[in-house]
Amino acid sequence: MAREFQRGHKARISDLTAGTDLYVGVQISGPGLTFDISCFGLDADERLSDDRYFVFFNQPKSPEESIQLLGAQAGDTESFRVTLDRIPSHIRKLSFTATLDGAGQMSQIAPGYLRIVAGGEEVARYSFSGAEFSTERAVMLGDFYFKDGWRFAAVGQGFDGGLEALLKNFGGEVLEEEAPAAPQQPQPGAAPGFA
Image (cartoon, rainbow, N blue to C red; front, side, top):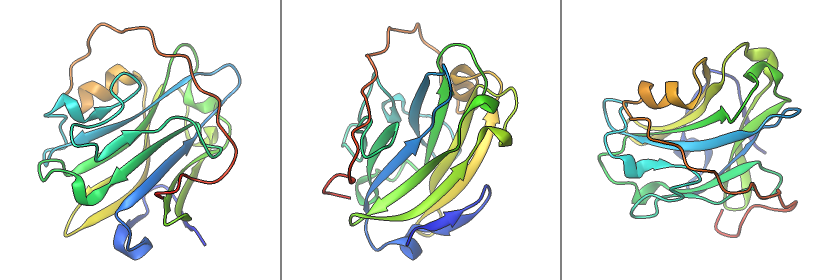
C-alpha cells in the first residue's frame, strides 16, 4: 500500500522501501496546458553547480545515468529512473519540478500526483491539484534529499516565473531555447521491470 503524503510531509526512503533503484512518476495535466517535467540535481548549497545534473527533455540522463528521464508511461505524464546508490556524493538533492510551456497557470491543473515505485510496488504518493496554486507557472513537486541517508519530501511550492525562475532559484543559467521534441503519449500498464 502506498503511503500518502501531504505538502510538507517527509520520510526516510529506507522507511518506504529497502530498494535504491526507484521509479518516479509524475501525472499532471490541464485543459490546453503543456508541461515540461524536469529533475534538478543540486549540491549541498541547493545550487545547480553542475549543469549535467539538470535532467530534462534535451538532456535525458546524468553522466553516470543515476538519474534518467524515461518519458510518459504507466499512466504517468513523465517518469524517471533514480538509482540512489549511484548518485555522486556532490549531489545532495534531487528536485522534481513541473513548468508550464506556453500560456496558463498552475491553478488550472487537474488533480495530479508524484509517486515513487520500488520493486514493482507504489510506496509513496503525493497528490496535488490546481486548488493549491494560483498564478504560478512552475512548481517544485517533490525532493529526494540526503540527510543521514536519502529522504523524500512532498514540496508543492510554486514559482510565478516558470522555468526561468526555477533555474535562477537553483543558480542555473537560462540559455536560448531549442524546439522541444514531440510529446509521447502515456502507455497504460505497470511500471517498468526495474522498479
